[in-house]
Amino acid sequence: MKSPAHPDLLLFLEKERCQGCTHCLRVCPTEAIRIRKGKAQAMAHRCVYCGRCIQVCPQKAWKASSSAREDVPSGEKAMAILDPAVFWQFGDRVSPEEVIQAFQEIGFPIVQNMSEPLATYGTQVTDYLSSPQRPLPAISSTCPAVVEFIRVKYPSLIENLVPILPPIELLMSQMGETQKGLLSAKGVYVTPCLAQAEAICSLLGEKAMGGGFLPIEKVYNRVKKVLHRRRGETSIPQVSEVFFRGMKWATPGGESEALGVSLPFIAAGLERLASILERVEAGLLEDVPFIEAWACMDGCLGGPFAVQDPCVAKYHLSSWTGKMEKGKGGNERGEMQAERIPLRLREPLMARPGLRLDENVRMAMEKLHRIDALKRKFPGIDCGSCGCPTCLALAEDIVQGLAEETDCQFILPRKRGKKRAS
Image (cartoon, rainbow, N blue to C red; front, top):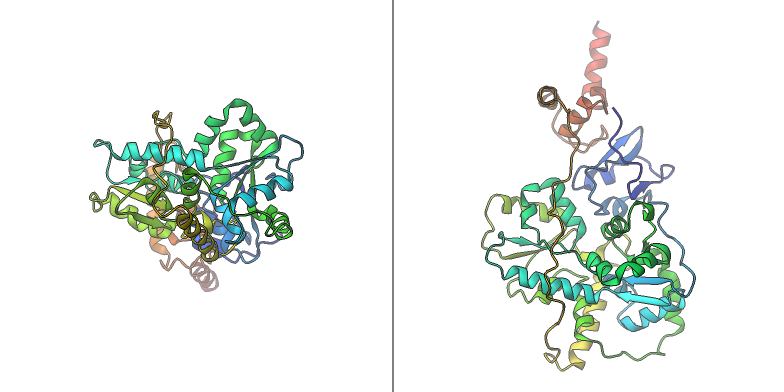
């Protein structure tokens, strides 16, 4: 049987760098990574693009697809869409307006930010949360890694996800067909997040795989150089309410604040979120109206492509918002206005298809019994030395023809001992 690793997965491994150290194997929240022949590989049907493997790899072997745009498009129509987290990679003395001007100088005459689609999304979510028919608790669908995590591991909670078009898709719908073509040809979504990168590639289609996004780390030094040279040239401008609130979506708590949630319930980090989702499945959190969920502990500021330490970036954001609050007299910003036409998902979300044991139900049941029997042979310590994250995962891989019993370091000596005795 072929490995379930997908050749077109946006995430890829530079094999010459990989030393099979198991760091990524241990942190993957969906057990999507295996070590085979001394090298790591990702299983597409389980990967949720959280980027934890990129963050923990000491050899920097995990990368976004090699077809990802690493250059700056040239021409008068080149466009950059900046994720809110991008603005806080450069220090609190740098205003968002200065960051926009710096991107224009390095080759993007057209620069957009996500404030408008985030405002639209926020208004839509607020309206949805006021509906008495919605499941409790409602779970934020802003983070695409969270959405995929639920589709893979907690499909029973799919109906709890807020069924509003995600902000990046709202932006694409607002841009129109002409601008969509521009984005796929000469435009990029500048982001610190692998999951957002995968989302934009999915919207643009397979032909644009990796071509519609630009990791902030790829242009950080160029932008930083421009900002350093132009330091002090631009005064901090007054910004609109929509722009002001849009900046706060970069960090946990910002979404709840924008939505006016009086008692925010924030679950940041997939490990912590998994514990919360298990409680939701057990019916223990039905008194919670809304869960603001993030794949990364520090929200988008802690994304795998981020350059700045998330604690420092959060300080930069807080410093800037404090200045803006003071300049606007505290509470004079008024209410956010955005489109109120319902913008629900066109199709309901479905559970992600997993790797079937067998198309034949009888054979699948037999394999399930074999998996159970094999698991009882193993020590159950989940050491990872076999190349699988758990003993159960090893048993599953053996039954699927992807591994052998002797991959287990505890089974191998026994096998050798029996051969010597015979």
